[in-house]
Length: 636
Image (cartoon, rainbow, N blue to C red; front, side):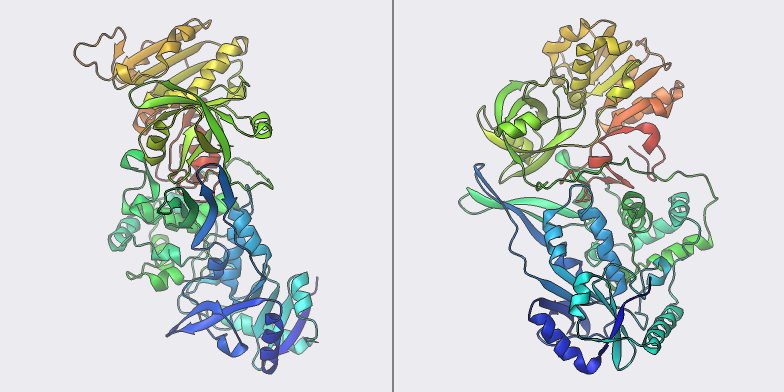
């Protein structure tokens, strides 16, 4: 289809911008010392359309550095944090940044659409400015994200000397171009000639021939990464200036009265030590090498695997801002010059799960605590019921999924559901260890108190696949909680499953959960329960096994034939459970694990739960081991 194009003489740029300002707030590239930023524009002369790149990309206008999600007063009053958004124009956006916004769209407008981002996007016109000369660090031609914008704009401008060629990209853009003269053939030719010349002059490139993602997976352990790790300061500057980085943290802040406050999200970085931190100060990416590779791989392959979108747009800002001058072009070229031996790799593909809802996915539903049952010194089982009858009636879940429990003024915590999906009582259980801010606050609450609940989220245990098969359940410590629903489902539908064995271990006898239910479990037909502890304190009676949970494998009767194994517990326990069973001839296709990571949002947006190319919150938390066993960096 032929493009619809016009011309805008530079002498008329002032009147064109003035016309825009009659209906829109206008932002564009303006000077800030020797550099450039996107800022408010009062008149055309304010803009520097000859800029090479800006310090921050225009993503700051859509995925804001800080965004209020809600305001609250106690638990009774919850209000959205959205502020009125007027109509805006972002003028002079380079093609790399246009493509950066298209990639962010995949994150924020895909499953569980983010209403804050969407409103800003819907109310903003993007006027692209194609590049007619390369910027110092750019390599956009590598990814076809420059020097020309193909899609994603309302208008695009190409400088051809004394005028701009203006291409229409949307109905809004066509309205704005009303009154402009149509472009002549020689104008279009001049525009294409300028863009080809710019592309020819771009000498910085990453060779993406073949499959760059596959190549990087083959070279995950290349010595270049250790060399770069020694340079990297893990300061996070690269992620702050990246057009496609979207990771954020969510925090509650209260006023001095401690009665009112707000929940805010703010930019975060996978380069920070505490980015993956969970309760008890466990850091899933403590090493700088892992964090450096996570960022670089996310840009160059993981983003594509997850969102089918470009993760790196080649703007070069990460190079310009890095005090150690770590350069993706240099890094990849050095690996390509001396690659590790080729090997077969499998790129992870996430399960398809698209959830479109008009509801604000950030808004918790109020739920009242109906009962509290003490399990151990620091673990309670809480029974919740939604306050709203309609929410209560429509709420369903699968065994093994999780909710986010919200204590307003403290924060949210992702907790697995420990009740049974097949028992529709209008209530649901969470078995919670008091180890962090939210869970310690929950431990101080009483029956009748109200919390916020978001969910359920994620993929649970493969109940349908287990039907007609034998089931081996292996749990450690608090990991029995998300498996309790499976036990109750099998009990309720006993004829649909084969032999059932439960192997459960804890550090000490007083740390075991659901002890009052063991006799009931033992009465389930064709079911065996094996218990073990790591250590028995002096004076404590214990008539069962002593040792880690894998020492029970020699006692069990389960064999690999027609059996599915499901496990949840500490990572180190699950690692040895999986390794032991694989050595015994079990297939990775038979093994299912439930993983823990930091899950701040639950809806595949904050990035905190990333494990290589995997988002644990939505791709899991339950995974078939065969699907993740070849992840770069490993699983456990």
